[in-house]
Length: 135
Image (cartoon, rainbow, N blue to C red; front, side, top):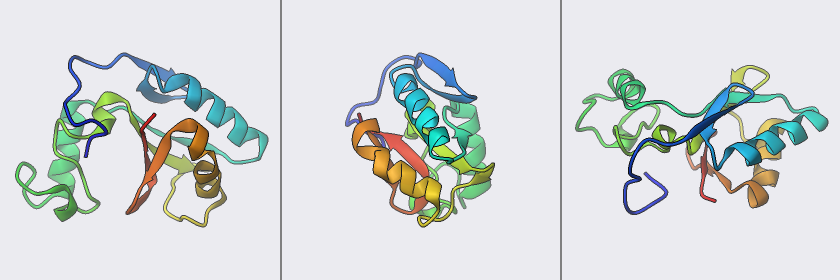
């Protein structure tokens, strides 16, 4: 689901922060978050923006019917093309020490959770790795 009730218009203005491509308004927060993670010994990385074609490839890979399946029918849940916050650079799939963040007990997850009040990043309920910017 998107963070807004109406779709965003036009392509997002993107910035790369330590290899994670995000919307420009998220970049300063992400830069600070990654720096603070390093200070406390948490190694974060990940992937942010993906275009419509990449989202369509994920749907084809994860969903029984790439066009019609609701996101929750996919494994893992995968937003429809045009509905993913990744397409706007407003979502990040985080990694810790180079591996997808799968465990809510992992120190990286706990760090992200503790930082969420000032970053505006919130976790997806069923995907510990997926955080969306709700700023």
